[in-house]
Image (cartoon, rainbow, N blue to C red; front, side, top):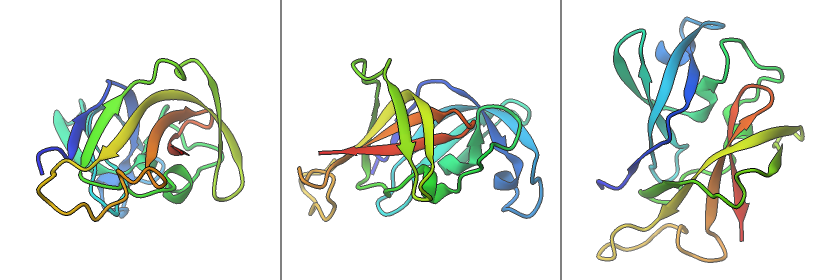
Length: 165
């Protein structure tokens, strides 16, 4: 399962401190971070490993909802289910930059029916990494495959939105 993790382009982010304290404390507080890698586990949201200079530490397994682009609570403040619609589809994951769409304008239609504009950052794409194991996922089924495009939203959050087919 060594392919469940991929490097990410460096992006300065702010981590909501409540994600560093099991939701028990730190609400409304933020700490600077830099994305390092993404992890894909089938049936779960993507996990982000983030370097936190203040602590001199790498913090692992943060969902996309843990991050904002500036140290303030966004408006609207969208929950995880509005920021990543689909779970990871397999262990295999690669991060790429799609030059063709890189300069396009994007709008995300969230589950709560809000439209939020965003800027393309990179794409996470799942695949089945081991031909000797049964492929129980849909990562390589053409009608079901999805690419996870990471967008920095105008409200200060990030979204991992899907383009299918």
